[in-house]
Image 1 (cartoon, rainbow, N blue to C red):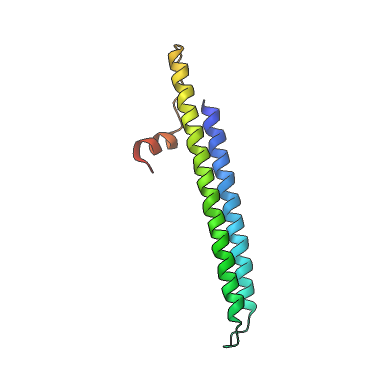
Image 2 (image 1 turned 90 degrees about the vertical axis):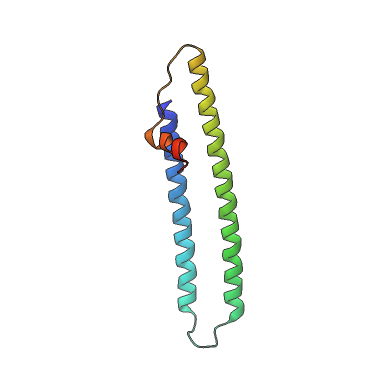
Length: 109
């Protein structure tokens, strides 16, 4: 059971790292484009507006991905609780969850 929580933690860590890498890459790329544009009033407003629109779309995609990820984690959590109950009903003693999981269930943070 402890191994399952380790896998869940690893998945969360990898997903967070990948998400932050994507955001950093996209932000750096956008910032480089904006910095390369002329600083005078002749900045093409349509380019800026299309960049803003693209960023809105990317942000929405990331929100949807976060929602899907959260849904999967809740499913894994419910599954783990059912496994715990199954072990208990068979007379076994399940391993305690990791401390961060206990803290989350206790405080919601």
